[in-house]
Structure formats: structure tokens, C-alpha cells
Image 1: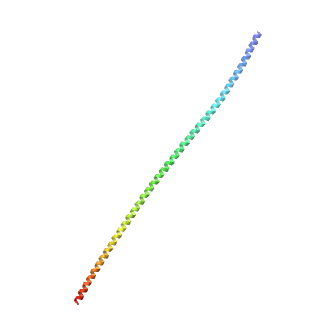
Image 2: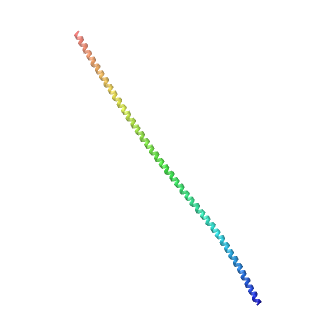
Image 3: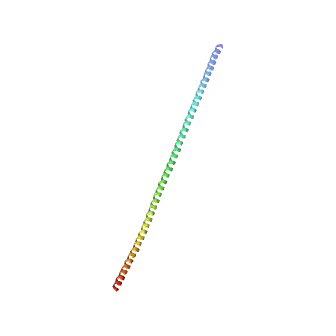
Length: 147
């Protein structure tokens, strides 16, 4: 029986050693798994941070494009207002010039009328003076004749 017991002890000893080795292998496997899980989580965090950064950059780019578009629209509207203002100023100046020309033409017409009126008066006065001189000359001729 001692032999059996020593064989049994050897089997028990071997079983214990195998059990201990199996536990160590399981601990190593769990440690490796935890390390892999930590690495995977770290990689996931890095990927998530990178994805958020990309999203932020895209959002910033969209906001910048929207800002640029607003500035371009504002500049275009300002340019259109300036063009309209310049056109109105040009039309106003043309209207003022036209009024000035019409006023000058009326003044010229008035001056010409006055000139011809004065000429007519002068002509009538000259005619009257000639008539008076003729009448005087006739009277003088009649007076000479009668003497």
C-alpha cells in the first residue's frame, strides 16, 4: 500500500503542480487580457478625441465659411448701395444742370425780348424824331416860303 500511496502522492503532487501552473497561466492570460483591454480603451479614447477634433475643425471651417459668405454678401450689398447712390447723384446733377441750362435759356430769351423791345422803342423814338425833323423842316420851308 505504501507504493500505492507514494504513487498516489506523486499523482497528487503532479496534479497540484499542474493546478498551480494552470492558475498561473490563467492569471497571465487575465493580465494580458486586462492589458489588451487597457490598450484598446486608450486607443478608443485617442480615436474619439481625434474624431472630436476633426468635428471641431469641420465646424470651425463651416463657421468661417459662413462668416466669409456674410462678409461677401455685406460687401456686395454695400457696393450695390454705392452704385445706386452714384447713379442717383449723377441723375440729380444732370437734373440740376438741365434746370441751370433752362434757367439760362429763359434769362437769355428775356434779355433778347428786352433788347428787341428796347430796339423797338429806340426805333420808334428815331422814327418820331425823323418825323418831327421832317415836320420841322416842312414848317421851316413853309415859313421861308411865306416870308
